[in-house]
Amino acid sequence: MSDGIRNAANQTGLCPARTPFACRIRRTPVALLCAGVLSMVAACSQEGADTPAQSANAPTSPRASTDAVEIASPEPSPAKAVEQHTEKVATATAEVDTPAEAPEPAQHEIKGVVTQWAPLVTFAAPGDTIVFRQMTGHDSEALEGMIPTGAEPWKSALGEEGFSVTLTEPGAYMFKCNPHVSMGMVGAIVVGEVPPANLAAIEASPQNKGMIGRAIRKLKQALDAH
Image 1 (cartoon, rainbow, N blue to C red):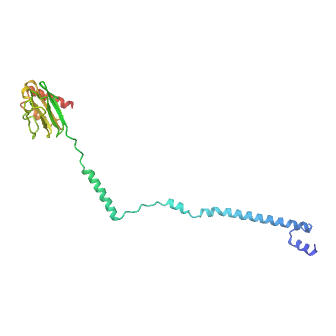
Image 2 (tube, rainbow, N blue to C red):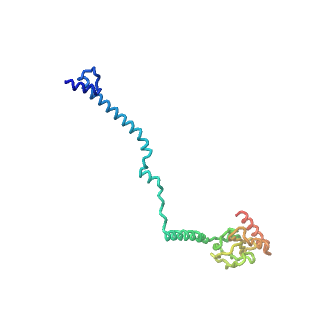
């Protein structure tokens, strides 16, 4: 090579002056490559340092924003709101006004057994029906003054099988078999609440003596046990 080229290489400082020019020419690309690699590493380091700040300032994704927003139900129109309120009031009124169904009237049997009524005391509800069975040689008659006020007294024919009465007035009803009253064939029917409201009036009756008095005592025992 010419001296001019050598002098130009020495002036750039790429190789020491004492190094042969050929050696300096071979080392120059290596030095440039190293310098480039160092520059790239420095640039990457700078980008890595800047990334957290960018992430911190990054806007919230649309999906996250949508999930965080509570979606409110649309308000009903005034007309619809009035309609819904009216339906609620009507439903509540129907629930309040609907009466409880009354139980079906029941039927109770009282049998004439020799000289006694079986059962001696019968408990019934207002509107229930009493049917008298095995009435051969017997009749059934309500005792005057020993039934509730306003109740209808009754009297069957002698031997009237299946004679029945429907009792609607609450209280105690005393009744007898006329042919066998002296043998204690006196019974009682209690309709409604216990004790019956007319119990004191029955106890105060002039008929409260003998077999009728005995039947009243049996009635009070049945009331205590009921």
